[in-house]
Length: 187
Length: 333
Image 1: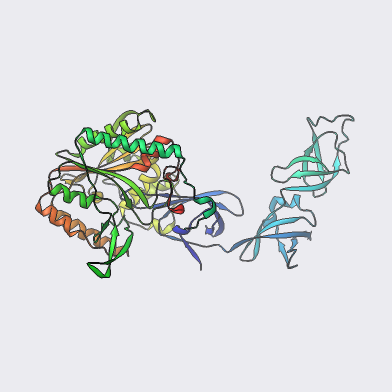
Image 2: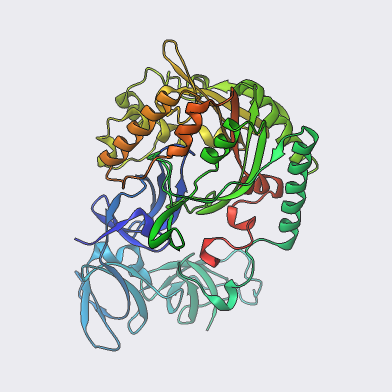
């Protein structure tokens, strides 16, 4: 079992916390002049994104997490698994619903995602920052409105629903920010 | 240490901060000159080291005349032992501004080498010295920081006010319960620790220190006897160490003692610290025989204090980290 001592702590280091992999976000060394030194550490759970705070006695060790990020191209879903391929090695990997989570609504065939692997198993899938998707359904807008104010919901080919300006119509392709879920522009 | 030489050749502090630092050093020297306190220099290298288990000395080797096969020398973690030898030799009140070295300490408020101001006042007890520390810090920060009137709180008071416990009677289990209730997440192996001193340090560093000295100088005094370090212990129930610390805006600035002068008590503390080192798996170090000889000769009644200059500059400059106030911190050294 690989371990890290508190002296190896730095932002980005992948460690096991509560039986799940996390990434160190912040590491603060505190020490009363004549007393025990501690490391106060903020760790981001790699699945939930939640930040956890932990205190270690300086010199203590923590289990390392075998975690790597890989660029993977999304292929298709069979309903139970989402299948991805490494574009360089052509190796294929299947992510389950827990790993894909809400991001399933941004997954479009051929798009390259960042997949987080823990001991070789996908635990998280991050879609590209922006994706280009086709509108499959939206109310016909008011003709001539180009202001973009107000807006209306539009359902995209992947099932995501985003607010779009009134002038954008069904069948059009738009660019969306996957981090905020906001419409960026028509393509 | 990882370093990118192409950009890291530059100082991490601005030249403006370095000029401020120089002015503050001038102000400190003027303060002592006005009080006829003598500036002294003592060696940074010694054949002896502090056995304090909370301090790790850096070592180096000297080979040459007098040591043909090489000899381990320790870089001082503070100039305390050598300055006490000067006091025993009759130097009177003295001060020193020097670099000191501590292994294992790098962080927002720590650099393994840092600048310390240490001074000793003959005939003063720790309360009188606290007053002088307040005068010095107020003078040096004048023009950079407005301070409310200083306050003095006992170690017991800071725990009672913030956490409602008496640190002198609380057990490790009491402290653990408070730590949990206050949301400090502690790994299981630390929870099994029964040494109450570690728990007091945990509560102090996480919950109390950050709130000490809001725009004022807060002195904390009368520490548990087990944390006496080199301070006198005043008998009583409980016995208390005549030691103090100074905080400003949550930063520990200074640590002072009504100095222990009893040589047999000093020898006993060295032995106890050496045992504690061994129990924690720390390497043994040679205790300072010169200090013991000087104490045997007689240390005048005095109080002494060490103040971190870099942290004082941080407070004057409004800097968030020590790296902003030293030209080249360890990762650029």
